[in-house]
Length: 455
Ligand code: PEP
Ligand code: CO
Image: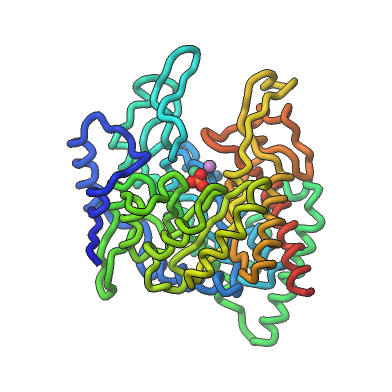
């Protein structure tokens, strides 16, 4: 294979920041090249083998986190809350799916965003769009919006700090399934979902004790669950600088994250992002949209996974509640005909984004980006049905969510309305499910999977 970590440079690329000083970017990449990696090749291998099981329907992938992480949210509470919500959702999913769940966070590096528009205009002033904290700052001023390569170093540090804390928490027993009380978020008590959640946790605790009684020992694997990291593989100079060879294993590894994904806007055969990703050893996720051509998706699979290696490829479809019925089937057929074994994951967020204008409340009259819980759920429900009808397996889900009480998506058990949105809207980019909406979705999916597996 004629590939090296910089071979993408001879291809056209999209969504790269326009750095005023290319020499400064080169200097930063030189520094990054010398810094320690964030993850290891054996962790990546372990994730890949778990994903191979998910493709076969023997595991379930739960991927979630911020649309864009921000440097300011790299706080102990923020990190712990992200873990807690993923843990709670995974317990609920394990309960219904009767499959083990692999948790992958959109964290420890999700600092770069593709954008639809190059410029943003406010009150007659146009500035470059915000592209994530690794590139520029969200404040609306000319200096803040200027891409700064030094931010790549800050992003690497924040990612390392985030991972360091996650590893310490996991090592210390924070994620022990014997102690779900460690990761209770205070709200669970006051939520309309509390009773259901407690019932599921209780029933898992019972099963665990039963198994351990039979085995005569603690099930170690359950005392120490893993989290894997993911981010969009977007800023190729950064990804290249973290691409390394490791002793006693062949090939090149992206050691900035376990599981990079190829965004919809850069998923083009023959261009830089696909060229870069095809050569690394990590498992790769590829976003598939309502307008992705089935034959093109199958071609991407061939390019990225020519050997059909188990666990190598995950197709994350994000087609929208109104697009999935027409668009998903033909993609499943085309990929099936190509013989590729992939993990299918449903991402019911990006196809359901809309702009609403609240008619009252704190954000009255100002358009705001949101997503409806009913649309998110409707896309998921259809995903289960379409895969079932096609004889393929929905092996996972992918969400934008947060472990706090934000008001960014409408609906859910508390019935948030458009007029509630401005009250606690904190996302710099896309609207996320709040903790309660995220848990509710996990419960609804879990019930559906329990029904499917018993029918
Ligand atoms: C994302 O997942 O943050 C994203 C931008 O998605 P997509 O590439 O599918 O639009
Ligand atoms: Co997003």
